[in-house]
Image (cartoon, rainbow, N blue to C red):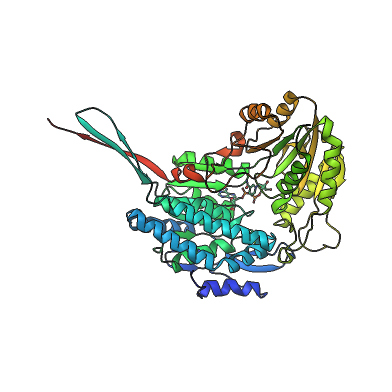
Length: 498
Ligand code: NAI
Ligand code: MG
């Protein structure tokens, strides 16, 4: 087990925990952390209080240029490292990350708002993700191709090259690690563009890569806004691939940039995920699953339970029990470690509140919540909220809310349930609760989604592929599929002279 180390950037980050609001040299290239070329900064806040906690470098095209130059220069040495050695170096990085996970978890909570124990769980996931992918480094075997006696033909898996990773704020370091870990294991260099709301742990990670001994430039980081730093990276002709997690609108823009430059792209976008609960379901288990699926991370999860689709026979009883259980969900600033914290930002708070208002004006029946929890006047809090009798055509039933809001619907037949599940253009995750195995498997094939979870939620892990269909995205992450995003097959054909 490694020990924590002290470096100028890590020390500055640690001052945030004691109440300072430092200006961080947060454009991170082969030269280490620097201010932005233009000298501009932007603010990051603690969502639990609205307090300023750091000023970060506002990256633009010139900063993106420096990061791409660093990542390009670092590529040959990283790509050509003996794969087993590369894997060992990532194992070492996982150790360094683990040693600093207390600092990282506290920064994540302060910057993004999630409860401290959830942030600690995220950090365990990051360490595990690094170790899982490090194991792939020396297992990327290609194929041999039988072309007959006159040829030897084989295909090697070669690293894609310089990869750009645009990440969201809901799992700041978690999302960065989900794509950076396989990219690094495959031999790619990685440019991270964290979300402007929550960049601190990504910056810390870039510094910890240096601490762990990764060659300078293998992992770089450009902080700043999406339309500036993000677009400068995704539009850059010198990169070899893009991975993005975030909104559908931004996903389309990034897809267009990838199309213009003919770069491969992985897009994990939003969802409005339905869970279909049938009369024969285990209701206690379903209530527990919906509660966790809808309110975990304050509903700011692409795979949150959002639409609870209930068969008529259990509709009322289920909602009674759900409301009772949801009354027990505690809300508090992240450092107080309740079950949920605030939303990430004033903008997200305004968006969620506008969805709640529109549900009300559309005649949905409010069963719980609907606004700020009592006693939490500062910060961007929204109480767990449940609506029943929701019009399936209303905005609250169709658009991603990304907050602690459940919408409930009733159905009579399996066909109606399926139609409700498939009525939107999203297709990320869907759930089925039933004891009828035939029905569960039938629906798992006819629901249009990248994942279908049966009698549970958040089923998956480092090994299971995840991603969306239709408007929810392109490509799969995690598991073997995740690592394959960062390699390309190169065919080598040899003529045998006889
Ligand atoms: P966003 O998709 O705009 O931001 C995500 C990341 O993309 C950030 O790092 C941002 O700086 C970057 N970005 C934005 N515009 C860009 C551009 N033109 N080029 C390159 N990068 C760009 O999402 P935002 O505005 O933070 O949240 C809006 C909504 O998106 C949320 O309310 C939620 O519904 C959804 N969302 C979905 C997430 C998911 O996990 N699927 C995560 C975060 C947000
Ligand atoms: Mg913040």
